Image 1 (tube, helix red, strand yellow):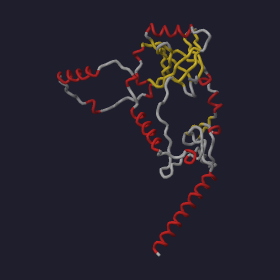
Image 2: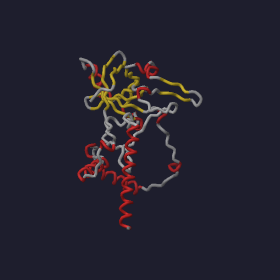
Image 3: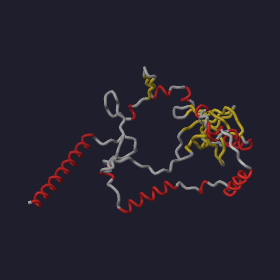
Image 4: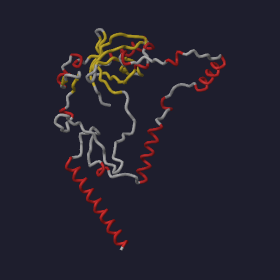
Length: 279
């Protein structure tokens, strides 16, 4: 794993230097968009609406538009914000772990000690375990202020970023306001059904069936020979699917002209054969 951020957990006079790692990863099969007629790769371009040029990421800034004025914010502008410059994960409070509603949980990160001594790290971990508390912290990551729960998972401290209060919607369903009569027998049968399915949760018992079936389908097509030449259909472009590697316009035009000529030549040949047969 590669650390994505370095900082320090600070509570009171205690300072715990840490490295932050993403705790999860995506296992989905990566799929591209292609033209259904020839399998050619479909790529998106970041085109400037003023000059019409395709713009590289390094020349792209962010901006705020209030409907009348546009304020451009450069990377230097954003990096100068005090919160963005901070490398501190500040403990705001310690709360009972069961008070954190799971709906607020967002992304998860592992924290590794970033010091020659792990004493402060282990002390914080053991304190959270023994008190059954979760630390509520605030920090800045990737140009955003974050609220997070600092908790223990095995021998590791981890951050679980939390949604802000105004990001969680209030459910309002009029149908649930209707009075419903449920008999004792129905409750008993429902409880019996739950009991018949009851067990201890083990995530290893579950598999993403869609991804398994998708990989099986892809492998079957490869084995069958139902494939296209990547260099021909994708224009030999390599790298991330971020739109940077766009086919050269002249090359695309050249290929289109050649393909059109071949198509016309084939049509002319077929027409000639038809005339001979008719004669």
